[in-house]
Structures are given as structure tokens and as C-alpha cells.
Length: 356
Ligand code: SAH
Image 1 (tube, rainbow, N blue to C red):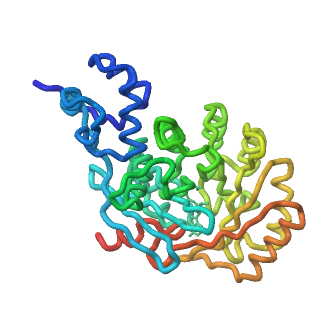
Image 2: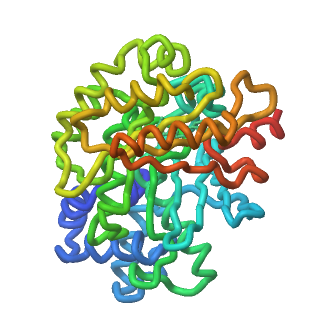
Image 3: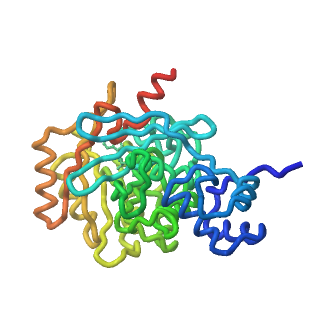
């Protein structure tokens, strides 16, 4: 009986080195394979032409390269592109590519669904299905990059994607080990080789995991979805706050080991009449005191039948102005790709409806 093949992509570089040594392969082979898989997006051992045919056959008898597959992509009128992936078990996840003047950011998913149940987020409304594997997270980047290269070879030098944000479906810190493994692939050499300055992990505020991330030595940027300035409001819109209230969350942020010249990004979804008052803005300036912070204000992106409203532009401006007067960097980040359901909080909504 032959042993079942292992998915080579489920292995971290060190694990792969050990397994390859047992097969009698050369020590540098693991790095070479990583480069083929992640830097060049190889989908079969046959493409790996600098490895002898006999060894390729041996590898193909022990390992496979299965992954997610691109099922569909859609282009929004504002240039945002949404990618729908199908996983081996039939689940689907999405990534969104957001072109800006000086960068192209890919927003990737870390879970199928999400257990956090934030009241304003469609993914949260659909419940949690499963965690993504590290390779399912990293391959969203590889496959989109291959799509953008249009059949041409790509390399880290000719790459189109400049920034990665873990802000798609799911709560990355609830899938800690696989996310950390994926970040090692995304920022590693061999691997995708992104600078840690260009990769951001966004969390709803899982305090023990924020502390664990700080201790882990992973150096990507941290973003925290704060979204409220009182526990009363945050309890209501983000159930995670009942476990980790604002004070505990901000204490973890205050102690988070930041690299020089880095700051924590605080995301603040603005919900009209809920968290967009002058008092909220003033409370926010006090809460963040002593934290190296910048603030991204995201006017709520409504979906049909939702209970919340987007604040008038004047309220958003006023809120931003108060933060700036207190010397905070505060940007207004508009949700993009609304016409293709690619905007914040919208992922997978249409697909799920269509399948019903
Ligand atoms: N679970 C992680 C990452 C996914 S959500 C987190 O909570 O940070 C990414 C961001 O989108 C979060 O800041 C979230 O608050 C925001 N968001 C979710 N739904 C939204 C909506 N309908 N409008 C605007 N922003 C939304």
C-alpha cells in the first residue's frame, strides 16, 4: 500500500528540509522548492526544470501541490478587483485587490466565515465555517500575482502587488498558528519576500493573542478594529468586547513591542448616531494617549436591510478634524469595490445568496 501524498505546501521550510533529508535529497532542495512554489507560483513538479527528472518523479510520488483555485474574478468601476477562490473541500473565500496611486494592496482572508459576529459585518453574520491553512492564506497572494502577470513569469522584482492586509474574511488571531506560518511564507526568503513594513494584520481585539503575537517576534504591522469609545457601545457592536473590554485591549496595545518608527493602526468604522459624535472623538483622543497610533476612519458601508447608517460627510470630517487637532494622524478610508460586493464587510455576501 502506498502512503497518502502529503501536501508539500502544508510544510514550513524547516519541516520540508527534514522530510527531504529522509528522502535523500540535497539540503538546498527545500529552499529551491519554496522558491518554485511561492516566488514563481509553480503548480506541478514538472515545471521545476532545474531539478533532475528522476527527483521530480520521486517528489511527485510523495507530495502534491494542491491548493485553492480561482473560480471567478470581477472588476469594479473604481478599479478594485475581487477574486473568488474555491478550496479543496468546496468552501469559498475572497481576496480584494485595491489599486491606489502609489501601491496595489491585496486584502486576503484568514478564515472561511468568522466567529466574531460583529453586528455591522456581513461575514460575521454568516457564522464560522473553518480556519484556512497557511498555504491557503499565502496562495491567495501567489494566485492573484499569477493572474496579474497574465501567463508571464513573475518574480519579486516584477511583482504587481505591493502591500498585503489580512482584513478580508475572518479573524486572523483566532487562527493564530496558520496565520503566523503564512506570514513567514509571505515575508520570507525563500518565500514571497514581502517587507514586513508592507504587511498588516488586522484584529477585532483578541487580547491574549495580541500579546502572543508581540512575543512571537513576527514583525508585521498591527491594526486593531476599535470601532467604539465606550464599553457599552462596543459590547453592542462587537461581542468580543465582553471578553476583552477596551481598557484591557488598549493596555495590550500600549505594551505591544513596536519596531522603530512604527505605529499601531486603529480602525474605526463610523456608524451614524452610534459612535460618530464629538464626544466620541474626544474620548478617542484620551483613550489612545501614550500609544503610538494612527487612526483609519472607515465610514460604514451599508448593506441592504442593515440596521446602521453611514454618517453624513460633515460628521466624518468633524470627527477627523478633532483627532487631527489633538495631533493624531487620522485618515478617512472609503470602502471600495461596492458595485461588486468587494467592500469592507461585504465579502461573500452575494455568492452565499446566489447559492441559496
Ligand atoms: N477580523 C479582523 C479583520 C476583518 S474586518 C478585524 O476585525 O479587524 C476588516 C475591517 O473591516 C475591520 O476594521 C472591520 O471593523 C471593518 N468592517 C467590517 N464591516 C464593515 C462595514 N460594513 N463597513 C465598514 N467597515 C467594515
